[in-house]
Image (cartoon, rainbow, N blue to C red; front, side):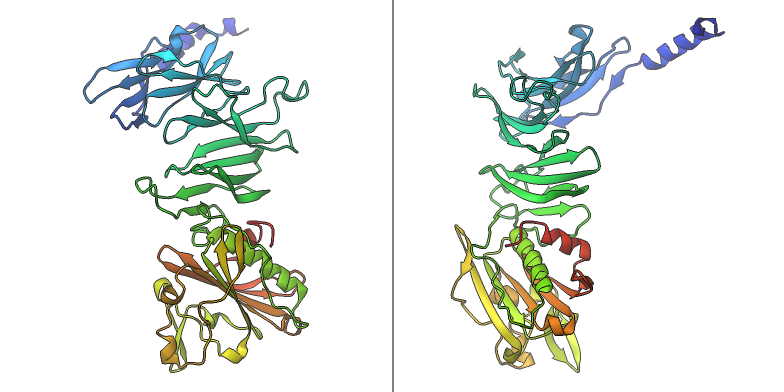
Length: 448
């Protein structure tokens, strides 16, 4: 039928002319040795080839040319190592799916004998030193029951020249339809590992490359998350990194989390009495536990105030003509609760095994004048501590208050939350945070 359509030959020729043209990409990257890589194809080429310019002004050289392969073989991806000495590329048959990773030594033009584990490989993410790479794959035949090979997608790490099978570092042992992806952070200190339920939701973990510790960031499959690690690649000894998690303002709370994950050995110490509502206490434990896990402070102060307190105490400096002076991060003062309002003040110090009770180096709340308190800077008295205040008498009032000062690169970040007892003790008022962020903190780790 189509052959009888008038002008079909002309249309075929026009389409051919439109698709037969030279194609050039912008440089994909410039490696540490000044090499420039890009994708090129001439007008008569069906497939793009990877080319390299070794130095400025040097001619382009082919690195990978799928045009020389069998007609049914395709180049699915190609990822240069950080120093451009090698290229990990995926070769597939009959399309670009079910690729297998091969590694090319660029200088010698030879394939390495490495054979990464698994099938249906995805584009790899190189370690910063070029010693290996991470990639997602399905299991090899024989690793799972027959017929399950296309499932159980996971993240593996392949070390060049090791001869050992790639190490499975991340996946799901319960849901075989989930799939995974991986990338290395720009600062070069973390692999960002994501497991997906199709495209509806995902969980995100970080693999700390210095010691292979797995750090949960969004560990529950309940939303769509995107994580970016902000750091400085030129300062590898920097001890802090910052997380941006789409949908929750965790920037301050997550400042040191990826560097120092710690737990509380004996649980969060809350001094309870008959006036405390169990639901509010549970909410406080979850939020504070998550904040500690993410901020990873060197010290923790937990202070119970006799009853509800308002957001006016947030960022307190001193009272002047009946008004509250609110300080900025680096000038935050210890909120001047009078000592008779303080039911209990607990102090915990970080050790190798987690956080545990210790003798406090100082009392936070003392009898003083407003002028005296103006000199009690958090940045001076406890620069590495996380401080929390929570309210008692919640059964009687039906509402509770929780306030936090969390260590950050530029001082402390402060927030306040009022929780109401309307069934679930959810936030009814927030300052410096949000209900979404508080929910994220509560689920950042199992409550201590």
